[in-house]
Amino acid sequence: MTDLKTRGLVIVGCGKMGSAMLKGWLANGLAPSSVTVIAPRPSAWLQSVEGLRLNAMPDTPPAMVMLGVKPQIMPDVMPDVARFAGGQTLFLTVAAGLPIAFYEAALGARTPLVRAMPNTPSAIGRGITAIVGNGAADEADLDLCERLLGAVGQVVRLEGESQMNAVAAVSGSGPAYVFHLIETLAAAGEAEGLPADMALKLAKATVGGAGALAEESDMLPSELRVQVTSKGGTTAEALKVLMDAQTGFAPLLKRAVRANINRSEELAK
Ligand SMILES: NC(=O)C1=CN([C@@H]2O[C@H](COP(=O)(O)OP(=O)(O)OC[C@H]3O[C@@H](n4cnc5c(N)ncnc54)[C@H](OP(=O)(O)O)[C@@H]3O)[C@@H](O)[C@H]2O)C=CC1
Ligand SMILES: O=C(O)[C@@H]1CCC=N1
Image 1: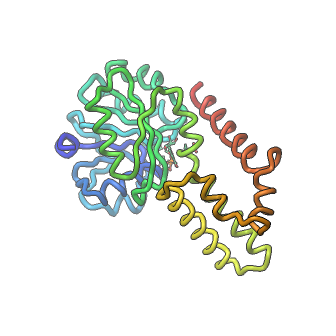
Image 2: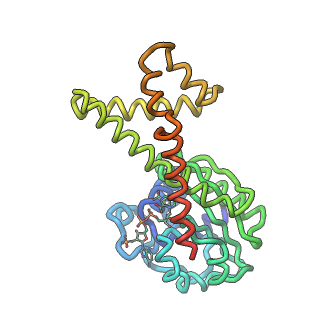
Image 3: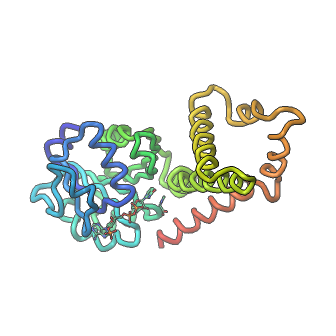
């Protein structure tokens, strides 16, 4: 972390995900003066952060370069960061789909690189990020990423890169599925006569509260579900619909996760 403070962190591409992470890091004490952001159209928030260096690549190799552009843009930015390849700078990428081999083709296999899959709850310190390093990334490199990413949530280390697309489909994109659950639960409540603002408040608090309970409880989610489900009561009737083997959540989410992975595989081509 001292190295990060003295030699600096360069973030190339700081949109929704990069900003969520940067907000968390700054809130956790990372000095803006240690951070350079390369962004063609910096947001009002980025421009408002005092001390942050904008759109001026450092002359000397930073401790870390974080690549936060879309996978489709990644080939365009590699020539700009290749000057830091070779070993002095650790590269951290958050892009979905693109394999380690893509970066090694541009930066060389001796450049330490960590591929990460974060999620946007990082903005409030409740993210979860999975990481995997290339052959040149040593334990200290993984530790540094784990500490940095640990400042904005939990970190898990993958056994291999082959797990990354499934992680993206579960926790990387997962917040979007949950936000859609909130939207649709609220809409269903509204359709049954609740005022829109009340339905949304009920749905948000229910998903937030149930998520927190699932995380904090010693019980499995399936056991917590059973606790809500009174014999002969109302929940059981709803669960008959949601747990239908053909049309319920399980086959629906399986299809959604598979569609997500298919897209990651396309992005890798
Ligand atoms: N959003 C999420 O929840 C997650 C995203 N990711 C990954 O994070 C990456 C970014 O996604 P996301 O933040 O959603 O996308 P955004 O479009 O919000 O962010 C990408 C940023 O890169 C900027 N950019 C475009 N071209 C360049 C360039 N040549 N140099 C520097 N910056 C550039 C864009 O600027 P402008 O808009 O002005 O063009 C934009 O601000 C993706 O690779 C994605 O796979 C991973 C996990 C979760
Ligand atoms: O939608 C995407 O491609 C990115 C990756 C995970 C979440 N957002």
